[in-house]
Length: 363
Length: 60
Image 1 (tube, helix red, strand yellow):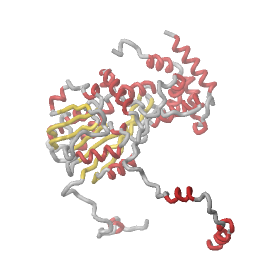
Image 2 (tube, one colour; image 1 turned 60 degrees about the vertical axis):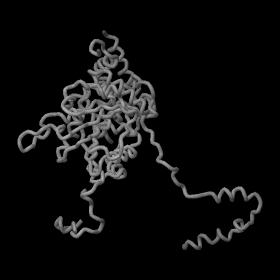
Image 3 (tube, chains in turn orange, purple; image 1 turned 90 degrees about the vertical axis):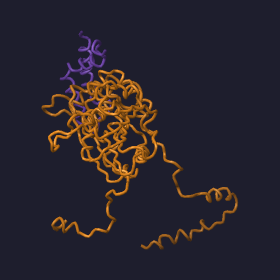
Image 4 (cartoon, one colour; image 1 turned 90 degrees about the horizontal axis):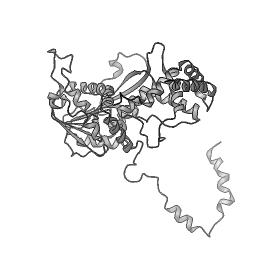
């Protein structure tokens, strides 16, 4: 059946042709104003995390200096791995920014002796020798200054700066030769805007190197708390904050104007004696839940007890000494556009068929 | 600072660790069909776990 035949009876329907003269003006003027749906000016403000809560959590965690230092194992490890990536860039960096420095873990990693085990001479100077000045910014004064008296502070030029808000950076355009960030930007509400700002404060052809928690981090705790909540209380409340996924990060960097992107993922699995130790450590790291619409107050004791049992049953393998917790790290490197930078060729300009190069065959 | 006083959560963890048999029974019950968990589906097992936990937390 053709479309014309379907429509014909409807067009001929007498009701449609009935002239309706009165009371038509109001609705017709309303109709005439209809336009295409469009976004209101400015970017929509995304609020996922409560910035104030996060600030308080970090501040509180850092006040207990012993606990806070003891639970720095992940931040120190990730900062070290992040700084290893600087070994591949044969440059000196006059001005470097550490965005969301926590307790200046990056500075500590930069001053470590002999960072390159594969160096030709057998030993290499600390990475800090290539950096003239490091600016560490964070929102929490207590956390930022926690290790201000440690020996690594005297081994490199270092400035600590407390900023009211990590989401708007108080720096001029083209002021840094590299921006580093370790385990901070997963608490940023508006990541696209932050990345665009980072791109603008970098000098041309300079790198942004960052590590953040992503996707499946703490999936064990997330799932078992959901089950415990469901079984004990009949509903679910978010206890673990949402995180960006690996596949989104490339797009985000691209959108912010970064070139030559590298994104890679790494899992660190830590074993804890029980789930209470895990939650205690997260709290001491200042990494506890800060979702805007989280349930206030502590998790009920029943749910905690149920969670411990379910976590063990669901996620412990034979032979595990403790309960495993996965931390998924997303490392990203993006370069600000600059002169003389390698660029991808234009689409369709390829002279070689990849199929020939790979030895033909059928696909 | 924290070493002189045990935190409530540590007491809680210690008491919970004494009920591994009951915890395993409850855990198995929930995990057995974790796509269809409802409120109080394992209430019986949980009460056993809680009784054990309460008894364990009373002891000095």
